[in-house]
Image (cartoon, rainbow, N blue to C red):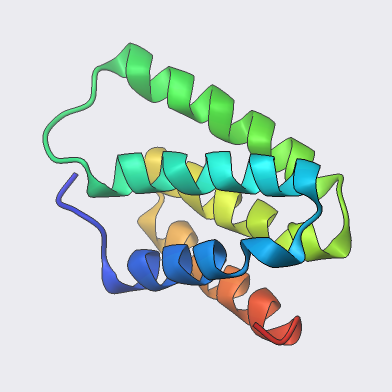
Length: 110
């Protein structure tokens, strides 16, 4: 990893600043996702395969939980899908999903 790009950073900022719109249980999952994204996007060097696999499993679990919650949690599921796409090397999909996340947040007025 070479560090976060501008779209990743702005998405994290939007996600962090908007946590207050979520219910308490949603907020915990969204915060865990934000922290996971930040950890991966900001690291440098090579990640061991088992660590990468564990992150993918945790990211998938959080996406599933957030996708099943309220409409306000849905943008966070898009953020998680972007994270997973990037983790698996699909950078074009990651960028599209980050744009989708930002669009959904703007539709919520954030």
